[in-house]
Image 1: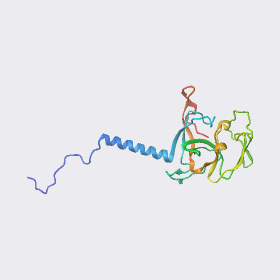
Image 2: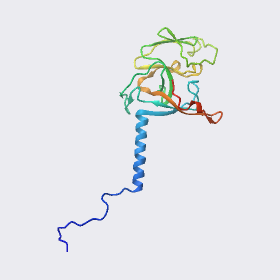
Image 3: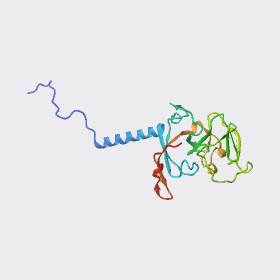
Image 4: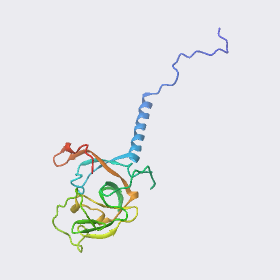
Length: 216
């Protein structure tokens, strides 16, 4: 007969086995948390809905934006950490639309803080020097006079501190800084990096030659 002080032998396996439901739940929660962190700080996907960046970006292109290069923005704050560099002329960036920050826009940086921007008969001048971007296109031969609008004749204006002047590559069909002003650094989301998918809505088929291509 066993003494009362003897320890009983437990034949059950050590530890408590997790139920399948708990395992699935933890996996899903972990995946969602990782996706949230990636989207918030590292990379984010966007779809191109308009032709303002043709022919660089077409309607139906899907792209990934690098959110690290300009500094990871902390949630509910203008603070950025681990910045690699500031936006430069020629960068294609995604930003919150200044007139409605619930909308995301994509344009090319034409002017950085301190630059003087002027447009004369469709020609962009940066600090008095003609600026020709190999990606820009003009589909309308008509020149809008300075008294009739700002599309083809604009400025000069000086880009404020912590702000940028943006234009679409499709210069005759882009709603950009010529019409609504500058983009603040705090509204910049990231730099367009690569096209991961492209869908031709007219032909109802993918554009395979555009998939995986870097954006410049």
